[in-house]
Length: 447
Image (cartoon, rainbow, N blue to C red):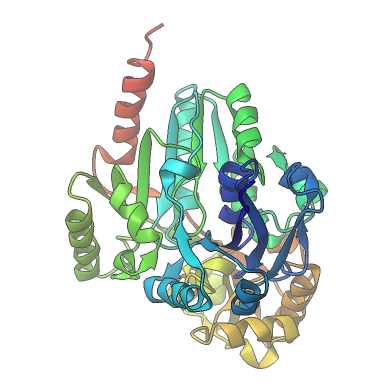
């Protein structure tokens, strides 16, 4: 028997597991020696469990630090290294490739043809060129439109399995109590909680073949909500990709965001209400050049703040969605914008950062006067609370989609900055949805 091809999968507790399940788990010609971990704290040092890894891996698979990659390739005689995580600058992808090639292995990227599941239901996918573009509010808007049209949409969320992997093979969330029972992190709650508040069902986990089967059994249509700038795990019938004019040029510079933009049916230009007109035109021009077959739809992302008059002249500490301002690269978000518009005095929280939060600032030096809502672990959540308590501010303004007041107790009022999807032109996204549904289900009212 020929020797099995020895493989390492570079990941961040998401696509890496999916690609393994779909491409390598049952392939006797391959042996996945290890996953590596990046972006997400606390993943390295664990194992992908045997119950998920399958009979070829009775001991499971080790998850190690990406920093150990060079030595691992040499010591374990690795043949191929597969990149399976997202939101990386193109240059960083090639730096990783250079490490791999210099150590003697092949560098591999798996594409949609090998990694997308096929659903028996119509599939709408929402993706983006960067994390923090506004996929979540766009998905909520679409889910609401589908509900009003009498269709049950199963919302499949890009995986975020940061807990016990064996317990997270297939997850179905219907209420906030489900989030507590699953011991969801802040990052998971940020994605799931707003959908649950609107009565939507969210499916997530590790094994997307099983997750898709469950969603298909309970719904009329699949709505895939991507994570970071990844391309969809389910083959879409209508693929919407968001571009962000607050980060012009990023649509050309990140993996796999550029690929995602090139494969989209519709390019959604968000945040046109807060971006400069020249930057809106720049991202539109890039989209037209990279994907001339796609239609381009402008949209707004209006920000609202409860009782903004309370903040004029008052000191505030600003909390933003964690991934958006960490590896998403944004220096500020909706909370900062809302506080500025309200005339608040924004306090730099860095001098009061507890250890876990100080480590985040050290890793992302572009952050200055915003506090990322980090909560991948109990320790991070405790230090987020400690930091907020220590900052000399009168109010907390939070744009985290999760209700922080339910997770941490403070002696400062927490005011929520909210941002939603808004149409700015007709027929807009709603009109295009109607056309899609007419093609798949027939005209409204037809039996």
